[in-house]
Image 1 (cartoon, one colour):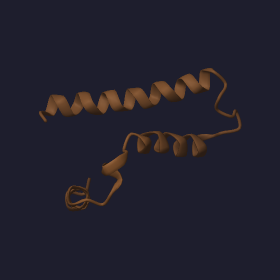
Image 2: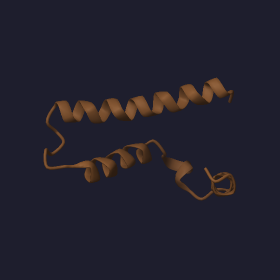
Image 3: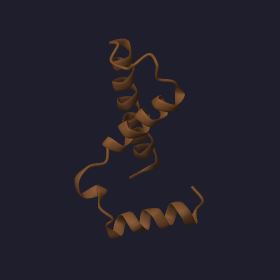
Length: 74
């Protein structure tokens, strides 16, 4: 994936999650009592929902990813 492809992928992924959440807020689906804590949890879960199926398993690729994140201090 080129740098431009990576940036576009991340932007699209984030935009989709944000659009879904803002639509739910605008349609009164999110409780007004939720503050930054609950909204952070909800946002994290929405991004987590983007990972599904085989990607959730601790595959060799996932272990390598985690090692890179730790090793590169990302």
